[in-house]
Structures are given as structure tokens and as C-alpha cells.
Length: 383
Image (cartoon, rainbow, N blue to C red; front, side, top):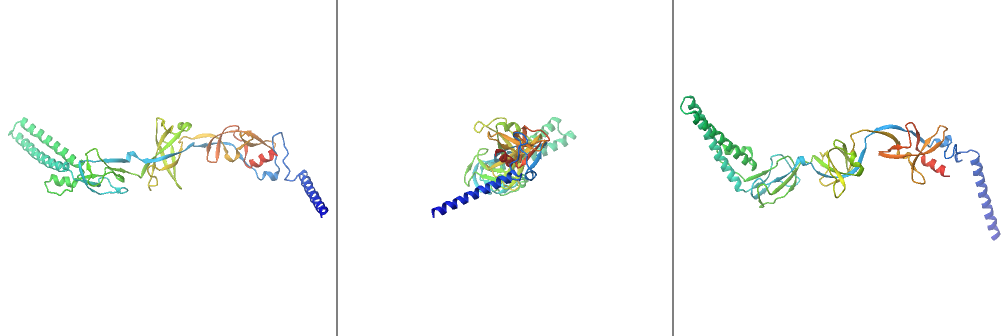
């Protein structure tokens, strides 16, 4: 039994040796499995069949716009957002809107039981009556002056009194408007009609969304001090992008921007670059203004941002797939030679634009490099 095992093992060994001999003979016969012969020390030459798996790229100058990849936070456009302070003092009688409501400019947000309101109504009634009477006297004196019924001095004084009274009336009307009284109600007061007033009204100074409601029913408001609401037009927002280090000099006002929100890319524009570095983050803030028609961007949201320079840059470009690393981790490419072989050329990759690198050193326009198949050449060269 042991003898049979020894003979069987011997037969298998001789079979393996025979197969290896056939493979070596096939390699020496010039088949495609034969490692390529070196045309020159360090160079590789491929067979026609092997060349079918190698794709070349001709290096040329290209124009592109450099982009800085960073992130930012969403904020309201402060040119279209505001806090609403109490225009009158007194307790809140009724809230008319809730956070998230869309409001129009001039829309009532809340009503207030305020003594300021009643006093302003009374002051306007008096001012309106005084202005009307003063103007009537001035007109009469003007007519009398034409018939020598009064002196010029008396007529001038009457005219001055009328102008003063009308100025007081206009100021009283403006005081009512600042308390949230609408134009029809002011006209009713001026005409002397009795009208039921629900109290002072806090109105929206601009159209937008009620972002915050900071008051509650019964709360006592102080005129010009108590913050009542925050309103913002969120159809356009700011994204505050962080720019670090060497990228700071590449970003300027007018540059384009792309903001990624899920699967959606929104287009914006850099409208301001801060003049100082943030002491905490060591970054400069680039403010991006971006349209937000569907409300996808929310305040304090953290989003990826690509800041694209408006200035064109020229440079030699090579596909990222062409750049390999040697044993010392130095970048290189395979360059086609005049004799059909391929030689390594060390390069200095610079800015990356999509699937291409700008090549700062190591190549010249017109060089043909291996864009696809370089790993195969590297493997063959290492054998």
C-alpha cells in the first residue's frame, strides 16, 4: 500500500514538471503570455495583442475654472429678513399668525390693548381739525388781502399758522400709521366718523414667512424694545461658506457657487468675502446668495459648497487614471516613445478638475501617455 502511494506521488510530480515545461516552451515561442522584452533599460514594449488593452491620451492645454470644495451653513438673507419690535406699549390682546405662516406686507400680526393707541387717535382728530381751521383762515385772509381788508403781515401770519397746523396733522397721521392703523381707518378718523377700533395693531413690514413668534397673549409690550416676531423672505437665502488656507486667495466676489441639497444642485453667487480670519475656525467666510424657491435650504442647515472661480485658467491636463505611484510613492505616468515602447515620467499633479489633473511639471503638450492600462504596464515592469 505504501509503495503504491509513493509511485502515485511520483507520477503527479512528473506530470507537474511536464506542464511547467510546456508553459515555459510556450513562453519562449513568442506567445502573448510572454513578458514584453525591454526596448531600453526601464522601458516596456507591448505586443500588438497587449496594445489592444491600452488606451492613450494626448496631453494638451485646456481651459478650466478652478473650484474650491468646502461646506457652509444656511442663514437668512439679512436684506430680506427683519425682527419686528413692538410699535406700541400695552398687553397683547390677540395673536393673528403662527410660525410658518406666509404673510403679506402690511398684514396684521397681532393686536395690542394700548393707551398709546387711544392717545394717538385723539391727537390726530385734534390735529386734523386744527389744520382744517387754520387753512380756512389763511384762505379767507388771502382773499381779504386782495381787497385790502387785512394787512400783508396778517395774511402772511395766517398762512404760516396753516402750514404749521398741517405739519402737526401730518405728524399725527404718521404716528397712527406707525401704530399699525391702516389707511381706511385713518381716513375715517380724519372725516370725523366714529369707528370701532380693536386696539393697536402690529403689522408685517415685509412679505415673507413668520420664522419666530416671540410674544404670547397678555404679555406686556414696551414700545421700541420688545421683540415680537422675526420675518424672512426665504425665497432667497445666504450660505456662509468656510474657506481655509491657500484656498482663500482663489475665492472672490462674483464667483459662482454650487450648493448640494440631497440630489439637487442649487446655483448661487459669491456676494461677499470677509476681510478677516475667524479666530476660532481659522477660516474666511464667503457669503453666497442663492435662490431658494422651494424652501429646500433651511436656516442653520449644513451643506456642501463648491465655489467656482469666474476667471479661466490654462494648463496641461492629464486623466487621473493615468497617474500611478512608484515604490517611493512618487507620482508618474507612462509616456509613449518614438520606438513604440513606454517609459516612466515622474510628474507633479496640481489642481484636480473632475477626472483630470493639471500637470505642473513632467510633461509637455503633445506627449502621449497611457490613460487606461497603466497598472498592467506597472505589473509587467515589476516582474
